[in-house]
Amino acid sequence: MAKKEMHKIVCPHCKRAFNIEKSDYEALLKQVKTSEFNIELKERLDNEKDKYKNQLEKQRLSYEEEMANIESKYEKKLDNFKYQLQLKDNELEQAKNYKLQLSTKGIGEDLEKYCKAEFEKVRRMGFPYAYFEKDNKVSSQSGSKGDFIFRDYDSKDKNKIELTSIMFEMKNERSVTKSKHKNEDFLKELDKDRKEKKCEYAVLVSTLEADNDIYNAGIYDVSHKYQKMYVVRPQFFIPIISLIRNASTNVLEIRNEIAKYENQNATMRDLNERIKEFKFNFGGMVTKSSDKFNAAIKKIDDTIADLQKVKENLMSSGKELVNANNLLMDFSLTDKKGGRKNANKK
Image (cartoon, rainbow, N blue to C red; front, side, top):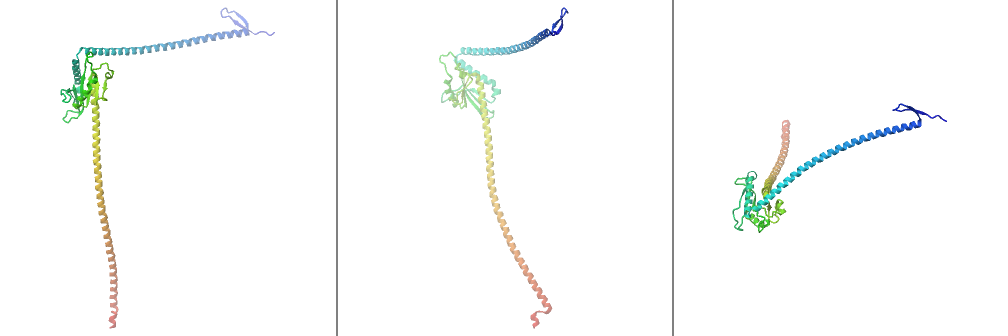
């Protein structure tokens, strides 16, 4: 029987030594290593878990802080909104109370005074050349008149150009009056006043139909019924004047550009006509000059031809003179030698 291999082990507490078999030793060693590994693994897992928990906690705190800031900002905005809303509610309530305290006539007069005062506030800076006064002239045709007439000009010169004009009617009445009026009840008469006073636009400034969302929206265009007519609440009195005046100013600028363009075109047309006339006259002059030139050339050619004939005749005459001279010389020489033949015979 083979001898079993033994391993010596010393107890760490009592320092006592004892021997165990190799297989038991290896099993014990493996158990110790596994236990140490598990302990180390647990420690690492615990550390990671703590780190993760700390990280999550930081993120949670950061998120809670951010949410708190957002809620704080939102609360501030919400409080401010509530405050503004409360102010508007108070203003609306005051306006309703003020409206109920006045008579129908008093409200109408106050509305006119309000519009007049509002215009005077901005006249100097916004409308320095404008006319805005009560319409005191009753129409001979309809027997009516508007409340105010607005006319704006490009300057104060005597040759000033009217930019635009507006006939204004102001209407206001208590909500508890026995017979309530509607805005539409006054549009037809306002349109007549506009035409008779030769105004370009018509505007009804009204607090009638206070609960009507169409009119409460701001500026209501009724030009589908009456040309160039609007219904506005009092707070839009100055804005509607500005919009109409600015639009009319733009139209005037466009008209001036068109006129300038047309003048330039007229100048170009005149220049083109003058060029055409010059071309025509120049063409006639060229034609006449060409005819005269051709006639002169022909005359020169004819003169050259005549001179050529004279030259040829002169050359022919020269040859004849040479022949005659040669005959004369021959005759002279014969006479000197032996006299003439006729003379010898004698």
